[in-house]
Image (cartoon, rainbow, N blue to C red; front, side, top):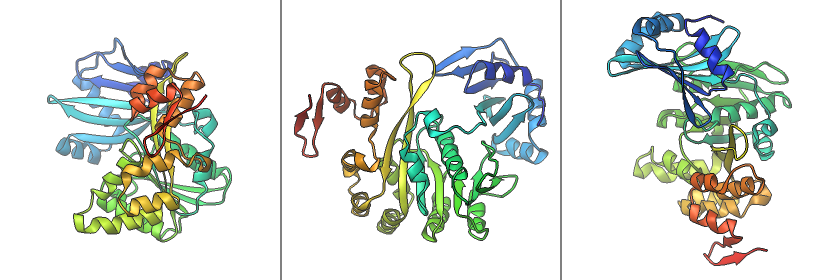
Length: 366
């Protein structure tokens, strides 16, 4: 652990329940609290920012930062907690963003997530994608899934992260956590070598390119469970994004591999809570079954939402189904639900008790 020159600012951020801290040279630092940007009176100069960078980064990392203009790392601040740190250049000055990582791994119930995620966590092999925009809670949900396994099963779990966020303590499972740039050269290298380290589960912090995806697919194809994140807003967009990594003549083969190896896609968004502070997770859950697999194989991705909506008995849910439930429970407002929806017109009809069938005909429930 360490004490940096930003200690007091980080302490104030945690006491304010801020998720992010934005620091610019010569400007007041700001916090993100919920959806709001909150000003502080702390104005760092270039010398202080440089001092912080030398406290948290190695000389090798700083040399690389000077070349490329970006640096990602983690910080464990004494008596405060863990932060994910991004240092970057803008307008020829150095800026810093820190995200507070609440290192206590919470359960699905504590996070407001469905029990279905526990069943998904128990699948023995395949690929599970957690998708969403930056700040949608993907890493927190993934940590909850790994801790669910840790509390129940004897597994060897290898995590590959850039940087490490949550630190896991062995319970029934055994964890090895590797940080890119410190413990391993790259995601690809770590994934390739992980197959020789007798893992049951491989967690990859983020799927960034075709090469890392192919390594993950190989791991799934050889009987391992891979859990990873992807920047995509929903299930069909996730499939599209993966397929688009490949040339046209390769895409049929990758669809076949996905149809066989995909376990589930969990997409997540955070919506402002109707009463009180904070945000509530909304989700879309697609579990690979015979229907989903066939649609992926035949490139009929536009039919995936209908297949998900019709399989609630299997634990699946579209965003609109989840948002409607959250509104009915009083957790979020109709206005915020509509803003978060992929199909607000359909959701508006749902609020009125009208639900469209696959053919487009409407049915009215009492």
